[in-house]
Image (tube, rainbow, N blue to C red):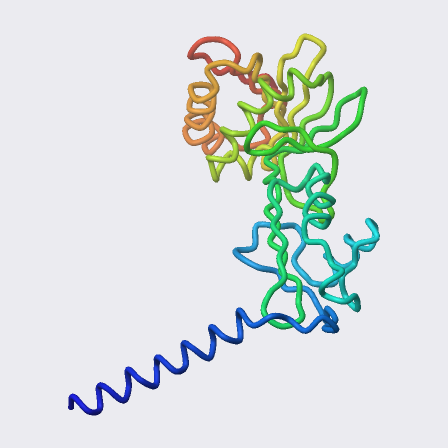
Length: 239
């Protein structure tokens, strides 16, 4: 048994040495990049090699077909980090003739479409950015929205909705009035929810859910055109 164990250890040691030599052996100067590897856990809107190559081509930095010793990983990182969507980016030359790229994108939690100004998204950190390469389902906020209101009040509302599976699916649109009151448009039910100011958010949604369960489930979801939850513990239904 000791002899078998010694042989197994020796074999493993030889394999390790072979892998180490392959990994750290100097790359031939004439080697050419033959592709890109997307590394790490996927937290990116860019999911395929073709998407990354297309993106890098815009910056004139497509590494495929170029000599490995002429590719600048720092230039690739700096260029990708200029994109508002990109939170983190790491680039390196992997074993063989490939360039490894790991991109972490911002996670959008609400779409913002103001009456004036540029539409965009707000992410988990409360940062506004302008576009996504792929559409995603999110609650949409429209109306009288400025940057400060989006980064404070709407960010607070977006964080609450994201943490609630039910309300994130139920609230389809948020309209912001001139007085910065919120009117919510639900996905289910033919009514508008007058929410008021962004305050006591959890309590307001709690009493609304109670009204849904004990009220609308009994009389029907289309009985009221307006449900007002702005005042204290009251829920006012208007036909």
